[in-house]
Amino acid sequence: MIDWLKDNWLKVVIPLIAFLATTIVGLWFKRFVDKILDRWKVRTKWEGSHLVITMVRRQVLPWFLLLGIVIATQVSELTANTKTLIVKIIGSLFVLFLGWGIIVLSEQLLRLYLLKTKAPQPTTAIVINIVRITLIIVVALILLDIWGAPITPVLLLIAVIVLVAAFIFRNSAPNFFAGFQLSTSQQLKVGDYIKLETGEEGHIIEMGWNNTRLRVLDESVIVIPNSRLTQHKVINYGRPLKKAEEPFRFYVRSQLTELTGLKAKNLQELIEVMRKVPDAVIHYHTHRFLEEHHYLTPEPANDFGIWVSDALGDEALGERLASVNTFEFTNLGTLRERLIGIIEEQLAKRPDSREAMTGREFYFIKSVSVILPTPYAAHDLREFAEILRKISLSSLYFHIFESRLRLGKGLNDFSVWMKDRLDEEQLGEEITRLDPYTYTLEALRLTLIQLIEKRIK
Image 1 (cartoon, rainbow, N blue to C red):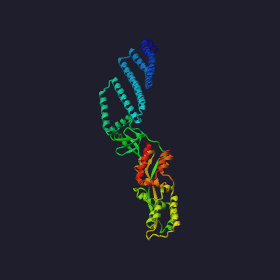
Image 2: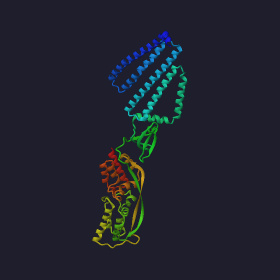
Image 3: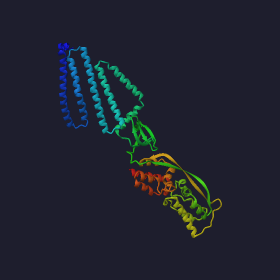
Image 4: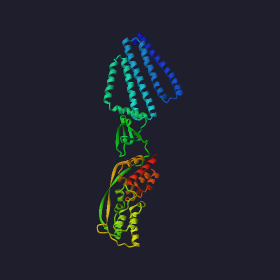
């Protein structure tokens, strides 16, 4: 080996000198380029300049190292075939190294600008993957050309793959492009409350490549193809309002009637039985008209006033009982005492021994409530207003009247939730001040919705 080096030292030294000289030039050129790039960064003040500078600085020296190997090979005494092979290998490494740098740089720049446009994560991923695949294909084609492989069959294969993919995803493609359109236009965003002309409505919880997911008012999730969002009219109510600490869950009350077996034929018996019956009896005889004749306003008379007027013929006392304003009482106990007090006051002034005819006695009936949950839950005022449009009158009655009297809250459920869970003190107070007995149930529903929508605006 030593003897060979003595005889052929020039064959080794000349390529080595060529490689070292190229490397030294590369180091000098790198310093020169660094200065130019620093001045360019200060002058342009482009936010993506540091990404470009980082990529170039990483690439310059490896480029010259590869160039040095090529020059060293060319000045060596290797065979022509060996030189060609080495040049192809070095050229391939150069293309791979440069291609990888461009791919990384393009991804970083895309993330930078897509982040500024607040594009959703799925859209960002789609764009980056498309650019990455395109650049990889370009690099692969250049490598094939370097090694003399035929490019035409590869292009035909790519075309076939594209056509097959288009056929397979022909149904998904419209949704994909619609999703891209939605993400770039920024007309709809995660968190918006939307309503389609086809009836679906809810908060957007996710916007994907093919579809958009909505959380609807009953807390279920529906999936809407993106193409429907671009082809149909969509009302966007905007960003969500302040969320409640816990959602308002709507319930519905079904009422069953039960005979107590108690009856009264005169005023004295009436007040004696009224004293001992449970609140459910008083509730039935003072509120049943409100549900059975919810379309009437003001509130029809209670059963006690009607019976005194019709069965006993005492229209004056019946009128006094019927004129009792139920809204003034926060619980059924005080309402009971008020009705009994009116009758006792009348008996104290003028004892009345009149009795109802047989068959026309006052029969005490008890209302039995069955409370069932509905699928609806409101997290903010907008959802609350939309659910009010959907719930039954029985549900509205339960949350306004049932909770106020029979449950002894003194306030309706709506006001309590708005004050305690949403910090909507003023709105809760406005609803509390409403006299629900002066509205039909439908009119009460509309009034509540109007108050809420006024607050939202």
